Structure formats: C-alpha cells, structure tokens
Amino acid sequence: MSENERPAKPWIRRRSSQLGIALLLFMVWSLAANQWIERGCGTAQSYGLVVTHFGEPAANQGCESEPGGPAYTDQYDR
Image: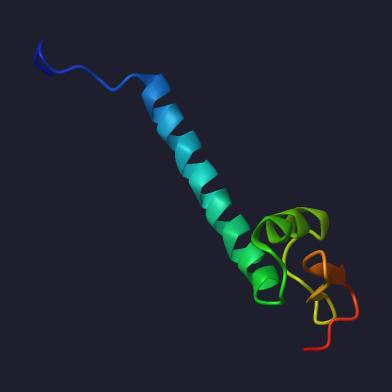
C-alpha cells in the first residue's frame, strides 16, 4: 500500500452496513404494509397494522370503509 492509500475506516464500513440493514428492513416493512393497503387500509394505518399484527393480514383481516376513514376488521370478506 502506498503512502497515499489509506484503509477504509472501520466506522465507515459499520455505518454502511447499518444503513443497508435499515434499508432492507424498511423494504420488508413496506411490502407487508402494501398487503394491508390492498385490503382497503390507509397508508399510515397499514404500517401500524404491520407492527401490531406482526406482518401481513390473515385471510379474514382487512379494513372496511367508514365515514371517518378505513377501519380495521377481522371479518374482512372481499
């Protein structure tokens, strides 16, 4: 290695690994939220439902239209 070349600093490698993991987790969270969106739930509500229901909806879960916006139901039949 010449004098002008420096090895990558360990914190840079660690930081890029952390960012990659965070991006991957966000992508998985978004894919699961999309399943809720397809069942009639709002976007923000869908991200919350992924957390509270540990992932994608079951066959009987979704959201129904209500006057105040979509509401969660475990009697989803569409």
